[in-house]
Length: 121
Image (cartoon, rainbow, N blue to C red; front, side, top):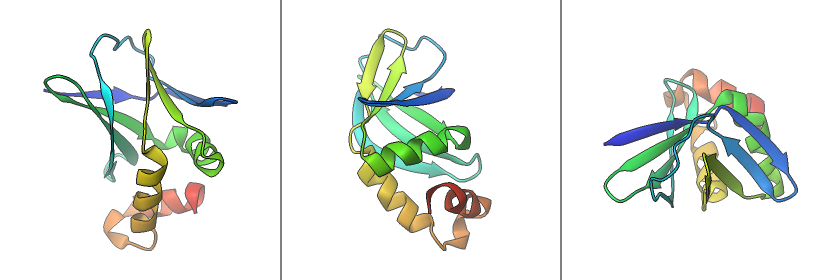
């Protein structure tokens, strides 16, 4: 089973980027995979979490991108806040750098290419 965790809010602090999902999704025993995907149909970056019997997708939509860009520029860690649980999204910067490079000047991403350029490039 695959679960989607949609980020509702992001805030940058001294210790990192706090990604809040707005729902209690604690207790899943999740860990960071260090892998990301692009959902160009819904204009989102997707970080993959692993749990005992499934994957969970952390959906990072464009409303969060400005804070994500700041964290990327400052190389601050991204931390998912899921109820009482926190998970550092390890490898996020490297994955995001790779995806941004692939999206740049690539018409296959459609409208997402322009949206990414406005915020990240």
